[in-house]
Image (cartoon, rainbow, N blue to C red; front, top):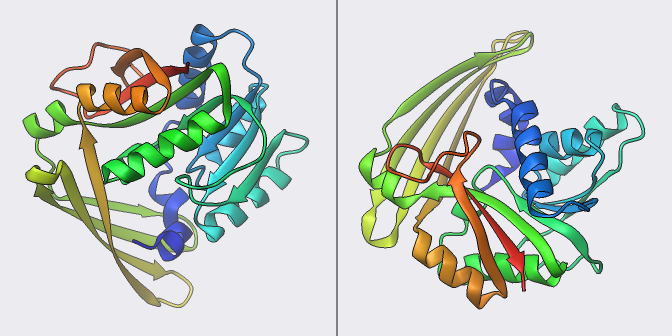
Length: 252
């Protein structure tokens, strides 16, 4: 999986994503857990959309992202936004070490689900634990297993455009139930409007769906205690209808 080519069209593909509502939700959940949160380490910060909005809400953000292309976009976005407190570092969330502690660690937009092995997931949680003091908060979302197995993934087509490019993306899922994994096969056509040049990109994104008991165990093994669990954004009880789930844990 290589995000470098895909990242050029990332913000356009997700222009309908309500980042403002998500930033409000994350702020609310963090401060409900611990009132004096000021500094946040974000895993998989992408093009910095969440980081920028959380910085606007008064937090100091450090984003870790593997894709250099996305980091460049994030830094450019912050430069155009005035004096907000956000920085971005290239690194692998399974092994990166920033050298300082934070009040909270967040991993949004299914970052955990990209950790498809037990070793990778535990390494991510270990990285979070290393960067938190006792009582620090970890907030993350992921695909929720019971909902994925109830509402199987289907082929989806997305068509977006702006003044310069038209993008058509086909997402075809392949399920591996014995591995708790879905491989999403992306085919993307990008048509440059000025030249009619067509670029084709193919990528496979392996995504793991998680179950409550394994998350509880992994958190415990990594020095955390699960504090709350709910549907992403609507805060309803986890169930069979919604894939996207939120988990909040405290460093012990």
